[in-house]
Length: 115
Image (cartoon, rainbow, N blue to C red; front, side, top):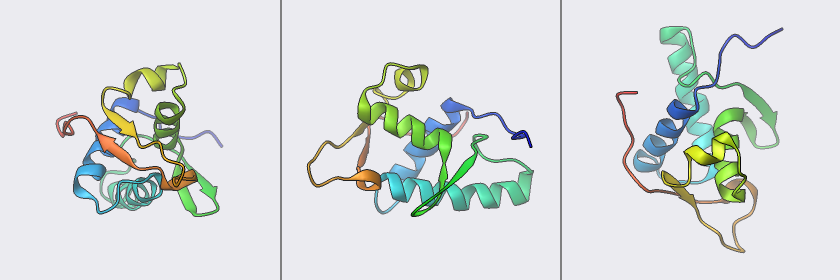
């Protein structure tokens, strides 16, 4: 079955920034969990996901694929379209203690709620 939504990277970035600012723990795992529950509510109310993402079943629960790719591409400095959207918008903490989903995300600006 084809996925009925198209991922909007710009909305994904704004969602990440919003979660970082209003959340308790700005990590990949926390962002993924908040996106999952926000998308569930948004789907019930509007019939679509916030940024058109698709979810992948992983060890620690469902993960929004596009949002996770945005975070990974900035963390790894991949030179792709998704990478070009992220570096001026958020930073990924680089520490030996951060493994996998525990990477911390730091915003470089506030979210745009009008997108």
